[in-house]
Length: 542
Ligand code: AMP
Image (cartoon, rainbow, N blue to C red; front, side, top):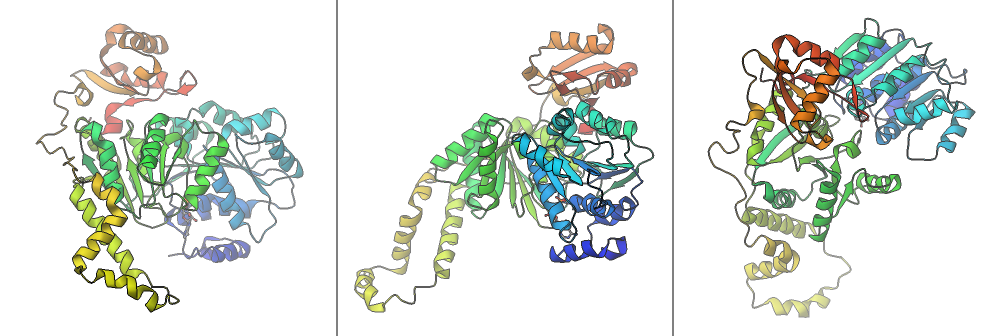
């Protein structure tokens, strides 16, 4: 394996890497650093979070920056404030022995401080799209001489509706020598950016496309939908050392779990978009320093979070879009460490498990939700081990305890232990006293018998996935009209429509499928970018 020095990095950077104890380049670093250091090649890196991609682009950017020229020469655009801060932090550690100035600009915080920092001169700017555009419009940042632009987590940014902003930013970097795009997945919208703004990019894929990280073990549990919370508690009680994120589909869901678990005696915080920026920062601080080890979060709020050492990701509810599963599970199993992803699923969601398996090309293993008795047994064993590890205070005078100890004479070891365990774990043991079996075990449980959702398209038709659903205010009739208006097609080419809450499936005649996809993809609906693809191309069931 090549060393960082062999990749062409300068001594200052090698020194910083030594301080960070980065011994060998990761695969994405191996492939990208030598190419990016040339500074002229457009580049597409398909890599999951946690593969070391920040250093893959950050080190070349620092080396290519001219310290003597006091203006922005490189721009990194990323989806969230958290990721932006993370990137800036990483750059700061890499440039330790250089006098390059970097700055993170993101929303939700004072723009005037950012403006004054930019005025003093910055070489590399990490930015979220919205705040960057604000700064461009206020003429507080000038991108005329930016030579390198990085789009990090490009698929996330496009999912979040930043397509037009990205176009605007890229159109405003006329002196760009190269564009480097990093993404975990390669949906059509990302391909469109590459096609529009890159010339013959070099494309590097780490692992198979859309393949989940091999360091993650994936398990799922099947239970009635209304028993999810009990199942969640059992899994957490069985893994008391868990440092994890529990994903929910809604902000209310994330809040509810945090509140319920808080009442049940767990230390947990919620992270979602209804919190103010300060509240979110406070939550993240507590989570990072492990004052709380559990976070219940929505996808949007948790985007870009890079917290070291997360042991578990729990899908309290499965996402509708299997791509989101990849993003969620990617919060664990980072930097070569092992991670576990648990998914709670009710019996009608079985098809989603299959879709995820097809996407990540890895089976999810079915496991039984532990019984109350198993959980208690584990808790007691853990407690006894902790007790055995306690080193008695050497100052404690034996005589002080002697008298009290005489009270134990009548008790057997077993009785004594029962008393201590009861004292320590009474509440939790009581709560499991009548713990029922939560598993759904019926044969065929959850197979979507006749569920239109999973049904293949009829002969002569193709099934399209569209990321709009009932939640966007549609019912079948106005949805059909909307699609026809946007695509200039006749009603006769459309077959069945299967409308879900967050997305829909629509059958269209074979010969118009491509046209519809082309027409609709990238259009906007209430500020959101439409995503349309053949259902088979994301679920794999062509
Ligand atoms: P990233 O994908 O950039 O978010 O990086 C994931 C984690 O891997 C971060 O905590 C980095 O500090 C760490 N990392 C990146 N490159 C290396 C390397 N070559 N050796 C060890 N750790 C690394």
